[in-house]
Image (cartoon, rainbow, N blue to C red; front, side, top):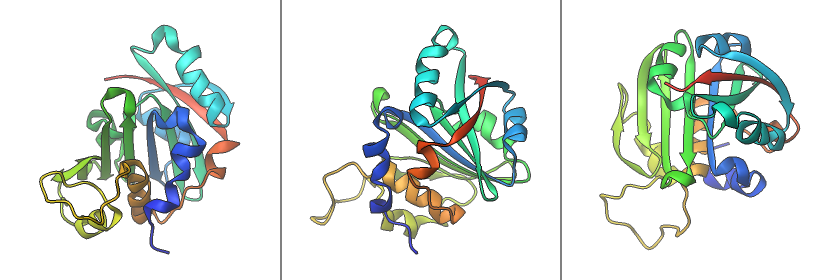
Length: 208
């Protein structure tokens, strides 16, 4: 099935507190323990479900939120899913590229509290294959900047430098489009079930 933005409208509807500021990362055939090690993190108490994870990230870790961020991890088939409320390790090149050695790393980030700052990153074995702003796909960076151009256009990412058409939607499509592009690269369709009642292995890492 071809991914479409309508497959992911649930994210902002079901998890508005997470959607305000999040980073979602999928890493191929890398355990949560190894992912935590590569990020230079430390183990934290586990949390079940997104509401508990978000609460812990914003409340329990407030005293040192300026230097560390909390994230939750779980496995889905051969993939490890990392969910960061108010975090961005997944798209931080300084951390993500070294951590992607020997694996495929797909991540997207958005923060509505920071003027809709958002990013998409596809990395393979420390190589930045593709990176772009979620709301400006005109400028793409990496070793394969145009490999997914047709897919990016099909999913409805914005190209501000190009004329719009009457068929364009008025709604912000960046986040559901990022989920759909992630599915295209991983062949894994995330659903609310993957987030709602999942027991997350938690860790925290320094912001660099």
